[in-house]
Length: 393
Ligand SMILES: Cc1cc2nc3c(=O)[nH]c(=O)nc-3n(C[C@H](O)[C@H](O)[C@H](O)COP(=O)(O)OP(=O)(O)OC[C@H]3O[C@@H](n4cnc5c(N)ncnc54)[C@H](O)[C@@H]3O)c2cc1C
Image (cartoon, rainbow, N blue to C red):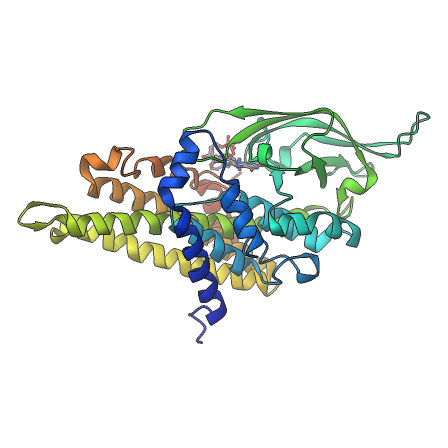
């Protein structure tokens, strides 16, 4: 193995996941999405096979691997046309934060279900008024003393979240709230595991244009009472605990994008090889071949940066991983949007039929330019941190 090639184990993992996902396939996935059904069968099967929790520590039911491994699983599923967005959230964000900052008891309680898919966990940070500026979140966590009626001391959450993926498929949601440091008035993010059936929690679906069985929700938290041990990590742990989940999130989002891009490009190349309207297949024409070749290059570059980010993250270099994960996520989203657009064009009119399923990928890949962090905020990050330019916001 050289430094630019993944290990034999990682490549074997990719092959196995691709084989399994291939038995489901894109048609199965879109049929589920259009029928308003879920992809639980595939989710549980990858859970049973050990792929879903490949990054979770072995002692809690996982595979003991890293973000690079779970990102490879995410990419291969998408490359077979079966992207599972909740992989970004449940094993990668929630699994990482709980593995790193949870108590032993919390790890025992939540990680095995995250690993085998029977205890999926959603993640809620975005708020309607704060948007991408998460420093402005207002969901509050208030300490609550024990009551005379026998309720134990704990916390009460109030606030509103938006675009929360898959909360209808999750048993719990990791909610980012804030407490205020009494001395300095500084906002501190605090993380709570909240049961999705908790009193005071309501989730309303947001009609989205994405062809996906996984949906987004508005979430209302009205006096949601939690036990003291719902708090993950230190009450004054600050941003470090939250950021532990954000590099994995970006690496997974990049893998989701490169997987979808590979899927679209494979289909486009296959179509360009066989569709003939003048002399020879349309792939003979450089106007068709070159954009596809360009996409091949852009996807491979994005994959390489994603693998670098994962390697840095798994080596514990959070700062180095931060720059690489942002760059990877940016490059992957751009490569995916362009690849899908070119795949649609290659298919001509068939590119916008349901039968060929290309146009349905336009919105899914376009979302990668917005979430979980937008293209503009990555450019802000790179301008400021990589180039030393003044902060612009
Ligand atoms: C499919 C999907 C799934 C999602 N899943 C989840 C989830 O599971 N959990 C969760 O918590 N959130 C989730 N989100 C939310 C996602 O993280 C946000 O949509 C994203 O952070 C952008 O926030 P916003 O939509 O409020 O955009 P806004 O913050 O309103 O931004 C609007 C536009 O303005 C730009 N902009 C804002 N400020 C600046 C600036 N300073 N400089 C330059 N440009 C700027 C942004 O880049 C963006 O293009 C999801 C979103 C989508 C689309």
